[in-house]
Image 1 (cartoon, rainbow, N blue to C red):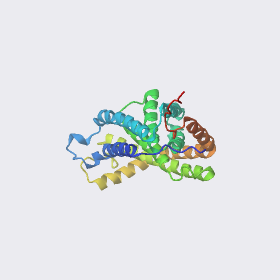
Image 2 (tube, rainbow, N blue to C red; image 1 turned 45 degrees about the vertical axis):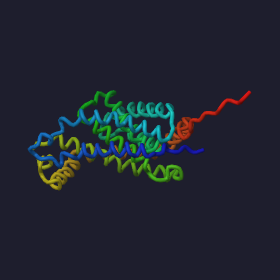
Image 3 (spheres, rainbow, N blue to C red; image 1 turned 90 degrees about the horizontal axis):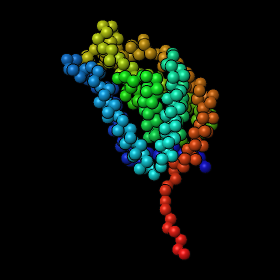
Image 4 (cartoon, one colour; image 1 turned 60 degrees about the vertical axis):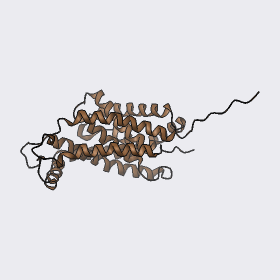
Length: 271
C-alpha cells in the first residue's frame, strides 16, 4: 500500500488561503504605503504578525485533522520532523547559504501534503530560531516563507503516480527554484527594513512601485544571489543523493501512522 499525502479539505483550504493572504499583505504593503506615513517602516510588523500567525497555524492543523479524521500520531510526526529540521539548520549555520534543512522540507512537504507541509515549515523555522537564538523581527516572515516553501512541495503533481528518478528530478528542480524564491521573498522584508541607506538600491517609501521593484532586483543581485545559489545547489545535491532513502523512510512512517484511517466504533456482540 502506498502512502498518500494528507489531502486538503475545504476547511484546510480556507485556513491556508487566509494565512497566505495575510502573509502577502505583510510582505508587500510597504511598497504601496505613503512615504510620509508611519506605516512605511517595518519596526512594528513582527509582533502583530507573529500574534496572528501562531493561532492561524493551529487553525490549519485543526482544520486538516477535522477534514481528514487524523489523530495524535499525525501531530506527533509533525513535531518529530520539526525537531529534526530545527536541528539540521545550525549545521550549515547559514554559511554561503548552505542550509541542509531545506532538502528535508522539500521531501516532507511531498510526503505530508500542502496543509501539514505549511505548518511543518513554519514550526520548524520557529523552533530553529529558538534553538539558535535567531529570534528577531524577521522570524515571523521566515516562518511564512518556509511554510510556503514546504507547502509548494506538497502541491507538486503526481503524488502517487510519480516515483523513482522522475520524482527526484522534479523535487530537485522544485528545490532549486524554491530556494531562490525563498531568498527573494525574505530579501523583500530585509530590503524594506534597511530603507534610507542612501544608495541606488535602497527602498524609497512613497516612490512608484515599478521604480522600487527595479531597485529591489538590483538589491537581490548585489546582496544575496550567491547565498541563494549555495542553498539551491545543496538542496539539489542532497535530494539527488539521499532523497530516495529519506522519501522511503517518510512514507513508511506515514503508512504506520495510518493518516488515512478513519476511527470507527462497533457495538459489542450480544451474549
